[in-house]
Image 1 (cartoon, rainbow, N blue to C red):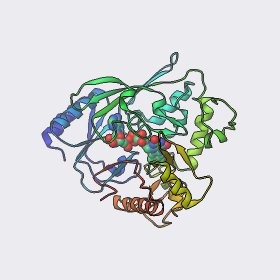
Image 2 (image 1 turned 90 degrees about the vertical axis):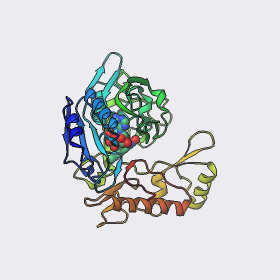
Image 3 (image 1 turned 135 degrees about the vertical axis):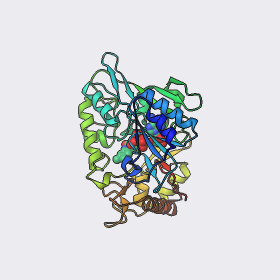
Image 4 (image 1 turned 30 degrees about the vertical axis):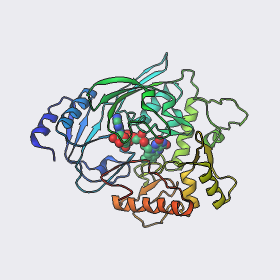
Length: 368
Ligand SMILES: Cc1cc2nc3c(=O)[nH]c(=O)nc-3n(C[C@H](O)[C@H](O)[C@H](O)COP(=O)(O)OP(=O)(O)OC[C@H]3O[C@@H](n4cnc5c(N)ncnc54)[C@H](O)[C@@H]3O)c2cc1C
C-alpha cells in the first residue's frame, strides 16, 4: 500500500488515476505476478513526469509498465509501485515520413497507422506486443529489422536530474536486444521519433522465412515490397507461431522469445556443430570473432519439443514455438521459473552454452 498522504498527493496530479486492485497477472502477457504496492496510471506525459518525481522523492521503488510483454514478475506482495504509461498520441508527417509516438501508444497500432499512411520501415515489426516507449529499451526486432534502423530520437526523462530532453538514438548504444536503458532504470522513454520511408514500399527485406513467403529471389538486390503486403505476411507468420497476443490462446501467454540467441566464439559454435552434426545448423556472423546461434534450435536439439513437458503442465513450451515459455492458465511464477531452469540447464548440459533470458525479472530470478 502507498502511504495515504503520498497516495493523495499523487492522486491530485491532473491525468493520474490510482489503481489499488490491479496485479501483475493483470498487467503482463504471461498473466503471472503478484500485487504491487500500488499502480499509478498516467494518461499524459506531464502527469507521468510528476508522478515519477513524487515516487522517487519518497524513495519508493517503481517499475515502468507498458504492455507487460517482457516482464517476469514474482507472486505475492511486491515492494514496487507500477507506473503505467497510458499517454498514447501519435503524429505523422506524411511529406517527410517523420512519426512521433508517445510512450504509451500500443506499438502495433503505431505500425498499423504507419502502414495505412503508406510509410515504410517498421512493417516487419508488426505484431510485436507492448508499447512504443519500450521499443528502444531492448531494441525490438523481427524478420531482419530492428527499431534502431528507423529510430532517430527519443524523448527521455532523466531519473537523476529530472530533465526532459530529446536525445539522438545513437546515445542509447542500441544493439541486438540491448540499449543502455535496459536493466538500468536511469531514464524513462517519454516518446519516440522514427524516420520512415515515403514511397509506399517496405525497408529492404532479407532473404529468409519472410522473403521466401514473399517470393523474393536471392538474386534481387535490396528487395522491397508494398508495406501492406509485408505487414499482412508478417502477421500471418507470427500468428502461426503464437507470437501475436491472443487472450484465448495460451500459446501466446508468454513473454515472446524467452531466451536471446546466444553470441559465442567460433570454437563454441564448432563444438555444437560437432555434437549435432547437422550441416544446416543455423550460425551467423556477429562481429569480430563472434557467432550468433539460434536459441530455439539449441532447445530443440537438446531434446525439448514444442509443448514440453506436455498437456496438463501448468507452464510449458508453446505448442507452436520452442522459444516461448507459456502459462497454460494457472501457472505461478515458480512454475515458470522451474521450466526456465530446466530448459537452460538442459541446453547447457548438451552443448555447454548458457542461455540468457530476454525478459526483465522483478522480485525473482532464474538463478534463485
Ligand atoms: C507474444 C510475444 C511476442 C514478442 N515478440 C517479440 C519480437 O518479435 N521481438 C522483440 O524484440 N520482442 C518481442 N517480444 C517482447 C516484447 O513484446 C518487447 O520487448 C516489447 O517492446 C515490450 O514492451 P512492453 O511495453 O510490453 O514493455 P514491458 O514488458 O511493460 O516492460 C519491459 C521493460 O521495459 C521497461 N519499460 C517499458 N516502457 C518503458 C519506457 N517508456 N521507458 C523506460 N523503460 C520502459 C520496463 O520497466 C521493463 O523493464 C514479444 C513478446 C510477446 C509476449
